[in-house]
Length: 470
Image (cartoon, rainbow, N blue to C red; front, top):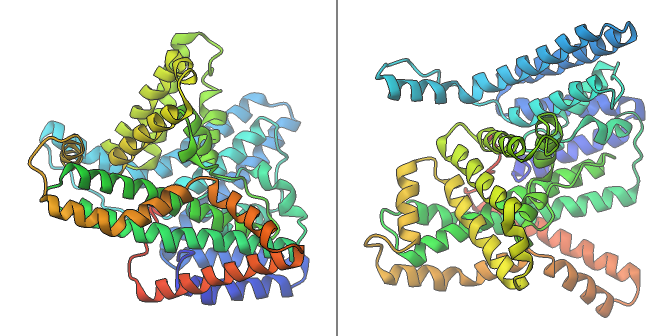
């Protein structure tokens, strides 16, 4: 079940909200837990057992860490945290990477080891990182041990952020788990944020996504058509993933939780360093906190820092998927970030802002082409087309696609910046003098987005979530 589905919007969410707000406060975590388990089991009921195992396993690990800490058995604490990390990453690795390693061994050795062909449990990369962050933070004494299994299970399985983030650390919602406040204002603001994300996903990401699907399936591409495809995917993945994150944050607000922001207009960046401070923020901060800094960060000399950056970006790419293109994507950004860190950032600062922006967007688009193509030969052909190598498609087809979709591309380019938000606020203040009319205008717009999105969902069959399987 995904947020941008009729069954979620018209059945699941209304029923859960009604049950949640009708029942006494002491039962609300139970309602959230039951509804979250149902939400997860809707698509893959068997794999709910893996999530439940991870939940109980790290709940017990938290208790053990506290128990050994009180008794000053520090070596035992280290054993517990090592076991927690190994088991959690072992489960993730088994389901996500086993076939990748087997297929590569087969190619290298000429053997014929059978692939397991296991379906990847939905959201396993996200909830594994959440459970790990909890046990590591308990080990570091940054958070208190959660003694209530129901509350801990609610944190791990909470459906608003379960399958595609943001990656919520226990410290982000520790207070909300026990004592959260709900109000009509919070519910309304949460609903508005949810509908903003729904619109980004259904009305923008899905529409440009169909353009990418058509172009990427063509046998031959002209240079202009290849760039149209690259831009289409660049905008699709942003509006798809940021739209999902908006929906998750909005749902969290409705139920009284404060989830961290995951995006801050990343395509406005003037460097790749800045881009990664604005894109998938919770993943970047997770690797910074739990990998880069423990490895030594930048505290042990330039050589060690470079090694640490390499490890982080290799893992960042590999986290996204079991494919060489994802590893290449991570290392691609490692090289760029390293060059920026060594000297390029200082040079960029001397350039006009527009040059910095063009530089960043160009490298981001190239990066998404690597990310999108799991077949390396297809990726190579796509790059050849982008940079004018090869025969390409007929020029008339390129012209048709640009004429047909240029308005959508412009809307998406503007929509990925702060400009719409600024213009909307200014126009509201100018047109509606009284605050109550401004509130009414916002609510009318949100309802329009809802009904328009529902109309598109009923009429269209194309409704993927790009981060759904990560």
